[in-house]
Amino acid sequence: MISITEWQKIGVGITGFGIFFILFGTLLYFDSVLLAFGNLLFLTGLSFIIGLRKTFRFFFQRHKLKGTSFFLGGVVVVLLRWPLLGMFLETYGFFSLFKGFFPVAFGFLGDVCSIPFLGALFRRLQGTSSMV
Image (cartoon, rainbow, N blue to C red; front, side, top):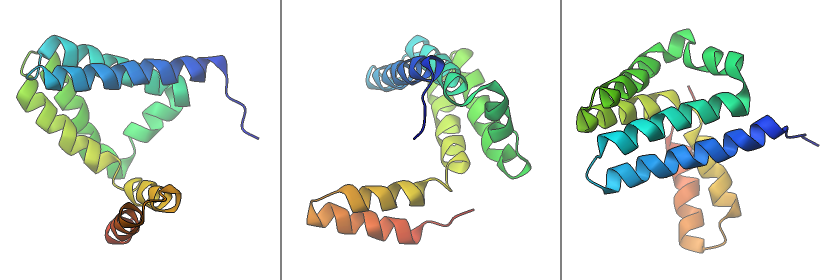
């Protein structure tokens, strides 16, 4: 059984608030203050969940440097109040960083989802993504 520490529980909450502020900032026509606050909360929450050392190891692996530079560059661009460009950079960096996770997530959703059409769609998406 996996034990979850209090710091990890706090990190989940902080990450959730970060995602909320990012989505809310996007809905309000790319409000730069909300997006910047959401970015900072998301990265802080991620550090609380997996730890500071593992966060640095994840972002600064040699094969993930391109995605990391786009993602963190997008965060900096949003902080400099260019929200549209920053969010495009972040989105590209996010998909580049987590491309190996998407097949696992789609496979899990395909197994869990009891709706026939969605289950088949998620299983098909699982097979088309590459694990790199």
